[in-house]
Image 1: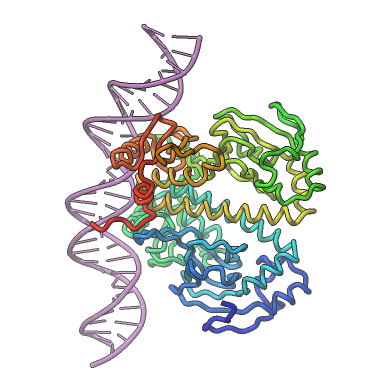
Image 2 (image 1 turned 45 degrees about the vertical axis):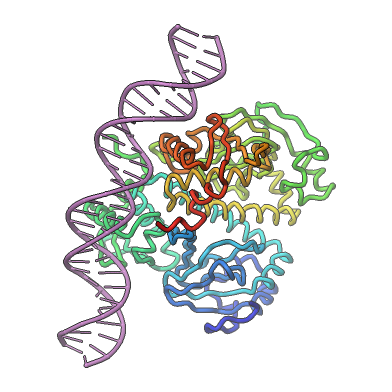
Length: 249
Length: 249
DNA sequence: CGCGGTGTTGAAGGCATTCAATTGTTGTGG
DNA sequence: CCACAACAATTGAATGCCTTCAACACCGCG
């Protein structure tokens, strides 16, 4: 458990870390960072690999250096629901060690900066700035989860998909998966398969596919290929997401 | 905003507080408690009253002394989803002041111990034990929210209702709304109206009512009146909730 | 007794699922 | 380079679950 996993692992120099200030490490002084540096290792995961399953999940914490990580929960009969979707520079892991039935899986190729649980929790207790950062982090995750609950409980399939695309538009700049084309249109790289999107939205892959079709025929988006789409009309997309008052007719 | 609201308000003696050790106040020493005592006021809300709406939500924090509080989110067209359900001795409020579109409403008559935002956040910064308690609190709320997402996204109507009843069975002892009858059967007081339950589960009131009927005819529960039900077969109820592997037929 | 609010029950309709077939994509080996 | 398999995504048709709309029952209260 305290062992470094089989995957590529090496110590890392926080000084040169690209997410140094955006991640929760931003709360640390140069001195404290030094301590963290000593317990940090970088690990790589290919798309589809399990990062942790419910049995061993609390073994370590991690910052996402690059890539997309999904958190899912599974019912005994196999039904599955995504409950978290994390990009760089998000933080992974459940402090204060209660066991939770989550699976974390790499949605794309992923690079993590990992910390041993015990060492990290030590640091957490010593340095209240870090704890506060973690608290703020957790609070905003809770906000996200609740927004998501509204989506799952009350939105229609097309609203769900439109909301998902808007979420990508909003968050994706951070991970460089959108860019603006010459015609001022946003292009989105979808970091998830249809099956993952379905898990995210509480739908089936067939329904997701059909809603893509509807948004296309509405003129809100255009599909370049199954992993890339262009937003043709952002206002229309927002309206489809149910965030604007619906047209009264 | 720093004013004490119009409702009944008086200073309170934390020494005699019934939830003193179970709430987040348990993190405080007698001395610190003294400080908290000075910024605390008790407020009463009748069932149905709004505790805070999205505009003013961050004005204060509170411990729930008694009663049940629901947190809801609303779509522009009026569709509504509950995103939090809180009992005594839960803590209410979003630290570090981002505005969030929640409504908090009293589901039953409610008694709160309120703290001014600024005063409480001061205390939070000075006393890291309190902050840690809040963090643990927030983490477990996040766990709850994610469990709920699984329910909203993937469970059927009957599974949703059964899960809700199990949640009450699990949490309700804290608020004295269950008790065991002479035949060793658990009796539950439902603190929510059908409409609230529907909001909780992402269903309509009609569907909730029908699922009560199904659970009854399955023999899992018995309805005493619309606000009280008896669990006849806990194992069956768990099975209906989809927590056990479903019967293979 | 009538009234409003809350909960139940029935019938019809719609949206998402399920099952099934087809097309598209990727990577491997001949 | 092409054939082929394996997988991912789309599309179609039929079913089913939940919703919607509507009527009715129940309860407390003036």
